[in-house]
Image (tube, rainbow over all chains, first blue to last red; front, side, top):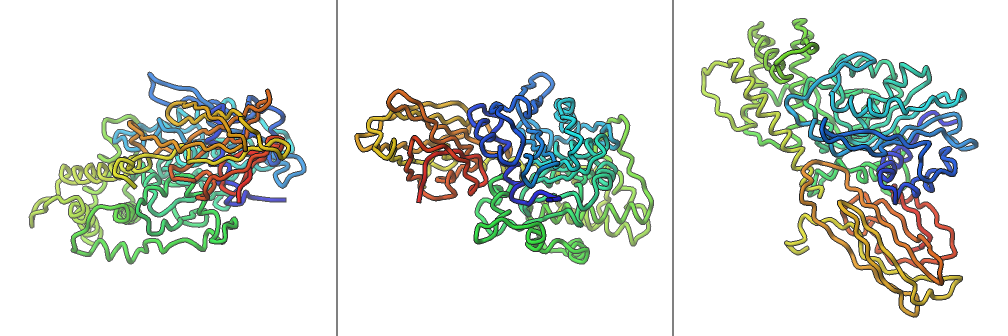
Length: 389
Length: 134
């Protein structure tokens, strides 16, 4: 009996679920998956489709955005269930919103409020599933990946069954506490987070949001290769292609893992922070910057025990808090503050902000640098959209 | 690619159909094509006496999409022949590239109307058709 979905089947579900929104192609989803899932004769998926609401408070639209079904009896998915969730356009705005609101997830931890309200719009429709179901697989691409993460965490705490999570190009869902708790609850060996090196969506929301997981066993970083339009590497058809080998045969998870490109080592991040050369802002440097920020924050938090309190109501944005943390770090012993200084200097260089010798690193200045870096990353994400269409 | 084509997406790649019914050309069969991306477009064609019909490509430009949203186009081709309707092609196109429907292969299809439509898994999309290609 199969314990996890293979990468290509997970990709086909994540891709296929986009077809359920439109009634014209919904029946074709039924035909495509009826041998794997208990979809009955119901070509309109009225019993297995989940309807969710997305969009702003004033302009919420309701549409079928997920399918939840038990595995076909007699197939390799018998006694298992699958929940596949599609991405939705309207949540994208929230990804680059500087004032991204946070809400407390019912399972604990702070998460992006846009994702949570979309999740809440279909959580009551999640089926109970038959008692013989021992494993529930949650699958999603892009924002569907964020919703699959919330769904998997919720199901793990409410169903008592084994839950497995598969995401393709998912943005970050919540803050560190949420990410680490969710990772622990679901279990590292039950998570498959697939993302291309130049996909901008997993780069947002920016720190202090964390991935489930960030590195380690369930982190399947894939190369994007040389391509004129690196943005295309967010699209689900690209992810599906990446689950196949050169001979077009589906790959298994260990094979996919072996394709992992060299990631940034601590030593290369250190070297980058120490370097002086001029750098331009691009997808690759944005990724390096993101790794460097995380590296410095970890150093600060580990060595000083400074707690970054994120919860509660406040007028400060998350970036304000990051700037405050960095500012505090600057006042610490030199072996720590030097890294904060180097990071801010590198960021300023990337953004083309002139730094005079001896100029004081005020909180105001640090904040400006972070806000501009945030805008630059957001612009990369927006450009992705332009070239996708 | 002409300059004017930049930014345009193939919402339906050009398709050549040879339609048969019980192995015989479906002469003068009425073909209806529905393409829905940002809005629904419907057009109609008629097969010649040998059952051949060409559906021209459809390209569209997005005016307002500024965020990285998954490209999804619903495609349906229906054939009306001798008073009966057949749905010969239902596809969810997931890439703006030409011929992405068949992973880059030209859409030269032979469609036998009496054949049961089947799900094609080779391209990792939702494609259900009774047509075949080389």
